[in-house]
Length: 327
Image 1 (cartoon, one colour):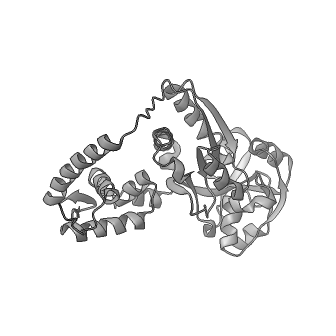
Image 2 (cartoon, helix red, strand yellow):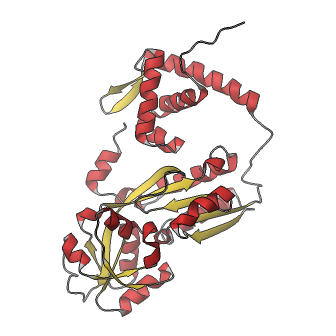
Image 3 (cartoon, one colour):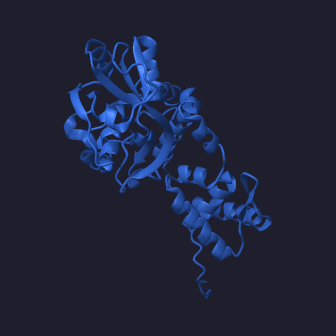
């Protein structure tokens, strides 16, 4: 009888290692796994301890496998292929013929520059599926809907998503203010936080749902609060209400704000630096993490985000330079 060796190398660590070898990047591995970078870094540290080799080393701005790391990677790939062959069930998924219904909840400011591209990709790859795009409900309801399977994926942008859901980053966007060109501050390049808080704000998020607002959620982290003078039930109403209401300002991601300004006479002013950037990410439930359908859906949304014309322009030059360096 073979006696087990207590080395700590399990299938989970082997899968992380294989993706690390493929990506040569902790950050990209974290995105693929839907985990945080610190969690992947900790796994790499554990792998190095177990296998007695650095496995990946830095070469300039890149990570490259060591000779032993590359050799182990080939062997791990073979082992995992055998394991997957043993436990693979009969479930198959072919998006081109699948006719299921799917539901994606999305931050409403994604409607014009992101969701149409997701819709087009879904129509190309899964023409028989029935697709339901819906607004994000109260933050407290998101987990329950995902746990029940009534929502397949959420694309969020509020600062503090629940930790009991899987998460993967999509992109970051600068925040800007949109206002009429006759607004007293329309000629400014940026505002201080105190100036910002003193303004009259228009919001598409009900004041009772501030937790899912990327702006009010961030202000809550700063222990500050802005004065929301008006809310609207639909994001598409924002440009029309803003154009007809002197004195109001609207805070949004730069791609949506620039689209508004291209179609209507608005001025754009940089938001206070304390607001940071608007981070967009995917959320999904653990129950769907290994589902072939949900893996395909997450991959499709990530691919679309990478193909956005705005993906490079959406980030400031400093952030662009940082984002191209593998870690």
